[in-house]
Length: 202
Image (cartoon, rainbow, N blue to C red):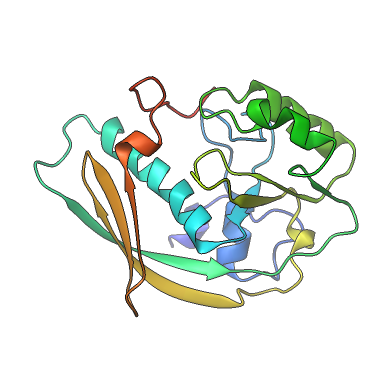
């Protein structure tokens, strides 16, 4: 019954594991995304390193927290699944390399998506299927990945899945591996611009 209420799967994603198909299934958020406008089909975003994807997730946990009318008085504990996927395309770009690296400040702006969304539209029109780019949220400047098309996945299912526990407050986000001792913590200040948390840009 629940499945019947969901949007139809994107063409070319029917054979994919649901974790890989889901990002392409839903319409864009009201603010679009880093490389996608509100009027364009959704992309699948990921990162090359665990620390980078957790930095991206931490930013959106803060957006969630400060988007609540009345945040909890204490902390909010949640569990998340971090999965890995293989991708491959003969029509890809590395925006962290020349000549695009000269425009890193605009493409990785923490608060202004206009340049990156314009480039996303141009890449889509040129038939680009997948691309890599510098994270706007990772303090270490890690590399993210985005896929325009489900066909850019090299395998139909995730290559790994790991559980992570998240502790969220108004001051920090802490991720801890459910198995092992790996911890990644992000204070609010890491993501602030001029003392304010930037909202996902329109």
